[in-house]
Length: 207
Image 1: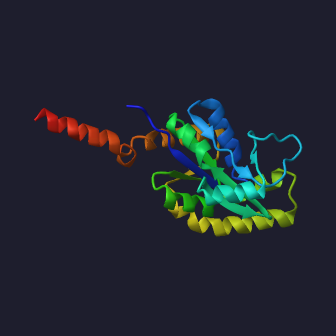
Image 2 (image 1 turned 90 degrees about the horizontal axis):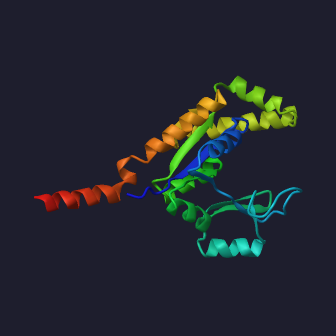
């Protein structure tokens, strides 16, 4: 039986390390594909179309919305961002698990639209550690750090909607836990309905 890919949605507080986690997971295992978003913002220096983002015009983006060609989309700071359905579908059909790194509201929209999507929330071991990581970046002002911590407080109210939480204390350990969770998710009955039905038909034929 050919294994179908799973849509894996990863969210987490800013500073929880989810970006680093996803990159390490994709580097270590070849059965994952990181989803690339389409955006209407201009490329930044060093960015390439099809690598960091698919860069499109606002008109093209609106057309994709009209054609239901996006799994999800949102508008931030006057620019649109969305996940192209065809890119994700291609990898899923090839048996790869497609990872989407998006915020909590978008994740819950995907869960409503795709009930068999797997939702994972990455958390630091403590709030104090989260503040330490945000401060350790050296790129954020105290005001920005306080804003991110305030947003984390709001986001914490939706964590119960996720399938699993993953504590990112040690990076390598966390990568292994993530891989184990996604691997196990392939064996749930809801993701194997075709195989179960096939087995039932074969058993009927054995009578």
